[in-house]
Image (cartoon, rainbow over all chains, first blue to last red; front, top):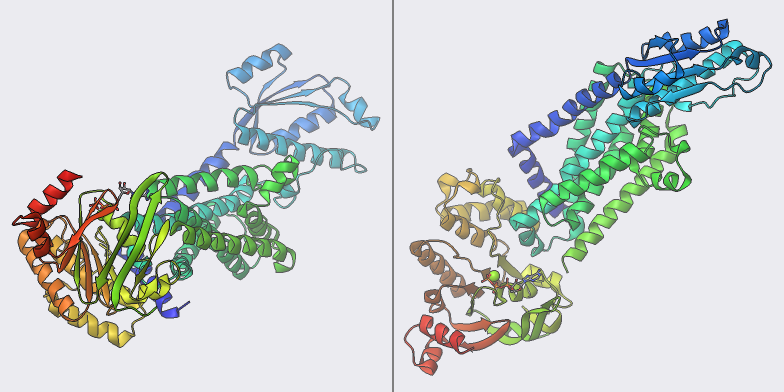
Length: 368
Length: 243
Ligand SMILES: Nc1ncnc2c1ncn2[C@@H]1O[C@H](COP(=O)(O)OP(=O)(O)OP(=O)(O)O)[C@@H](O)[C@H]1O
Ligand SMILES: [Mg+2]
């Protein structure tokens, strides 16, 4: 490995980046646009959810439970005292997203300290909304339990993430996830096209007849994009803070350092795709598919990892965002430090090194 | 391996799946020679050159380039050869100067050497006014001369040119060949493929490739006598016609 050759590649990559200012502008503005669009889309979705109540008990306790739902800004009570058979048509017409059916013996059951069942019907056509309602209702039920019956706060399932988001601002929960998703997507897209572009133009061949080896090429290409990705990360976090008032309770330096590791993982992943794909289009498509879906579905972005089926839990361990989500939510919301997070940081670094090695190996193979 | 040949090829083959792109070719190229590699589209010229440059592994056979084996010593070969691929392969979005500096850098030239070479090349190519313009804005003929010059930055002893004059006008081609002669006069070996039969006349020796095989090899005058023709064009047509 020769430093001079790596430096030549780094300078060349920077020149490409800054020369093409239009792409540079897109690279910088796209994450901002994404965080604004998705951020508002997700947080708006969760407001103004309408629901119906059938209260067969009509006791102070049942009213207390209903108040648990109505006294926040997410749920709006639209129908009361309707007949059971009307519920379905309300759902079908999309007038309501949730219905609560409180049985006649609600209060008696509560006071006899039995497990009390309340029926909650959720429209899960939009699974995000469905999951959200489900989690939120658990929280309402749990608060209700605590208020009414101090002895057994654990009757209903408790979502640990809501614990650290006490005012239940969904932005606090989703925006750090968005940061993870956008950063991964942008950074891996950046590198996924760098090698394929050179394959298409033929310049890769010209480099490969020189004494440069694949390691030097890959390292020389990663370094410029780390700075660009890092700059993107800072912008995304600033916007998350300004627009959605997401708290940053922990250390900014720690966020910066651990984001760098995460960016490194994303860039290495892009390079790996780049080494395999023949054209830029294939590379971009593969990157999109391999980053967005697993990150949304498997990282805990929406569905908590702990509540996934076991096989999926194992798969989620291979998704980089899983670790970064724990890290960034931990630092931003809980304000925890490296002492609690070092294992996740280590896992992330491991994945990064593995991916970079795979990129280099794949790259060597395509030469043959 | 001690040899006075610049390139020496023995039963070299390359298959792509069932397809045989290069079929057991054997030949030798002397030092300082201008060796022409002729053949119709798809004859296997590029595939053969790529194997000699270490860009592609042979399926079977052996070859030495500058005395080093293409099967085991590609990294040594790379230090001793220049290559200009069939595709234009400088960076369109870099300036003339930046391209020269980049290629100088990846060949590990020192900073002073790069800046000397840059000045030298730019004045040789009369690119003074254009040195800070983007390479994409150059006319094709100039681009190709620039590509040739950058592939010579590290002073290789053998240079492989894959259709260096594809698509340019006759005057640019003439100029290009003037440079090739100049390179050869400095003792460098030039290995060049072409479609243009008039260019074949400029070579010391030519080989004619057809469907992966070398079917004829000799000096242009020798071949003209053998086939009793006056131009390489006629020879080529009659040979390809027979096969
Ligand atoms: N990577 C590859 N995979 C499969 N087939 C290939 C590959 N590279 C080349 N070929 C095939 O091998 C044959 C020889 O190709 P090659 O590029 O060597 O020809 P050529 O003589 O350089 O032609 P041209 O004058 O058009 O440049 C062609 O039929 C081509 O389709
Ligand atoms: Mg060719």
